[in-house]
Length: 143
Image (tube, rainbow, N blue to C red; front, side, top):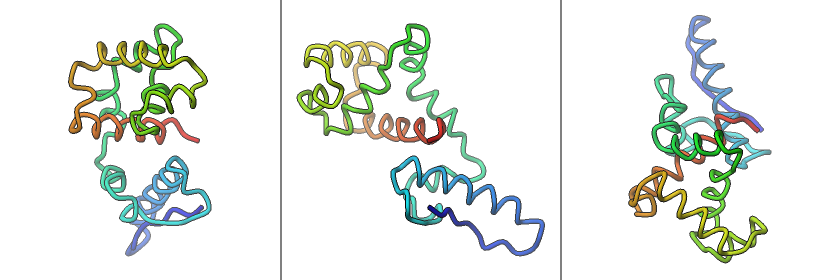
C-alpha cells in the first residue's frame, strides 16, 4: 500500500509532503484499500479533509462526541453498532446478523444513539455527516 504526495519543490517542502503521504497511507488502510496506492486527491472528500489545516479529531468529536462519551463511560460499543448499521444499508436484519445479536438489541441500541445524537440522526443530510465521522474515527484510531 502506497500513499503519495507532492510535488515538493525543494528540501523545505519535503517534511510536509512526507506528512501528507503518511496521512494518505493511513487513510488508504483505514478505507480498506490495502495493496493499492493513491494520493489525497484520489480519496474524494476524505482527501480534502486530510489537508494540512484539517481538524479530523474535532470533526469526529463534534459529530459523534455523545456516543463516544457514552461508550467510554459505560464500556459499551454503540459506535460499532452505528457503523455496522450504516455498513449494512440501514437494515436491522443484516445489522443484527453482522453483530451476532437479536434484532431487538439493535433497535434498543439505535434508540439510545438517537437519544444521544438527536432526533435527526437518521435523516439523509445528518447520516452523511455521521458516516463521514465514523470513517474518520476509524482513520484516526489507526489500523
